[in-house]
Image (cartoon, rainbow, N blue to C red):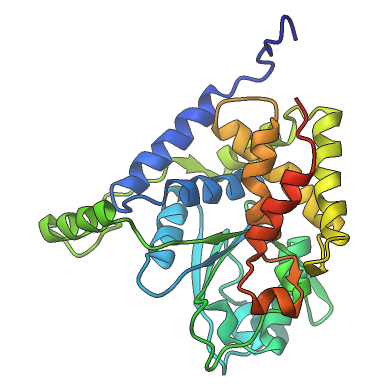
Length: 325
């Protein structure tokens, strides 16, 4: 660093070009939601799973499908329902009379990008089937271990307002999601643009014109690049202070885990790379803090009753801590 100017050490031109192509392709179909789309792309680059929450009709599933279609990998969709069994996701052993042996008939989890629609509609037994594969990128079935192909990413959606026939996700499973992205209602101008766009559309298939931008090997190479981005010691200390404060905050019953600290750093690296920088700034940390923490921290019952949100508490925590410069 010379005279306060950082010298770029890593060539991010290919990554930046790919990200811009992805954003351009998605914006042909999705109006607005720029921050959410940026976080979704950051999740892919940071090798993390993402939970997408929003009321019905705000294009949660469509956005996830667009992200999947912009990458040339195997895509699976699983609709979670209360009667879904673990074997419906993982697969089941089938007897082969020719070999007189049992062979695994692989379930839809054996893909690269897995879209789980309405993840909170399945009971704990089915949710538990995801624990190992989300954390370790492998499955153990009948004593055999199966490694997932790279990249492997779970994109899950849930509806925050409908509680009948739903199950709260276990905290241990929530902790496995890198980000929780909340899709908001569009603004008035965006709503007008959505209606106009749909009115003039000549085909019902909105995904028809979306072509893959990245291959599996591209993603693997980009993830290595993102992993190697520079993080100053004072930035690491800033992250540690945020998490430490969350564990001692009077508004919270449950603070962030060490996994949350790592998630903030990894998410911030991906965001920095998207913005064309090979180093992380405090602004990157602040930008990913709420998406990383909002599903990991637990409000005290009285704060919940007052209408305080996890994002409010994360914002208060950051304001208490001196931002490194």
